[in-house]
Length: 149
Ligand SMILES: [Zn+2]
Image (cartoon, rainbow, N blue to C red; front, side, top):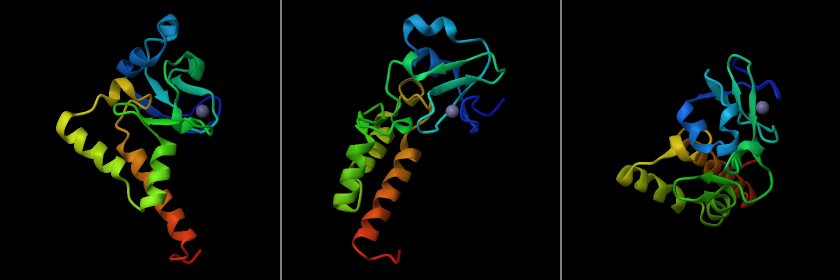
């Protein structure tokens, strides 16, 4: 199955290395042999579900807080360099641009990133952060009356 059994939204495939790195040691036994998908729905307690329907892994089983699924701060989103959604939105709304995003891009280029083993989504955070920044910039523009709303 491709859709989360709890919320019904399509999940994104993640590799086993991500689950091994982020599921708490005492919960590792719950990881089945099949393929897993990540559920990104805000408020849904399921983080990973098995494609073969054999089980789910909920947020309590993870070592880290999954910021994109939470509505209360702190919501971590960049796990390699330690940035939260709050911090990124605040800066983008204040400056109209994101020095944090520039910094992450530069560091990823220079040092590479370890998203597969640090980010619960198992992929680089840049796409998600770019969308967060764009949304913050849009809100800023609306507030300043420079966009018809
Ligand atoms: Zn879900």
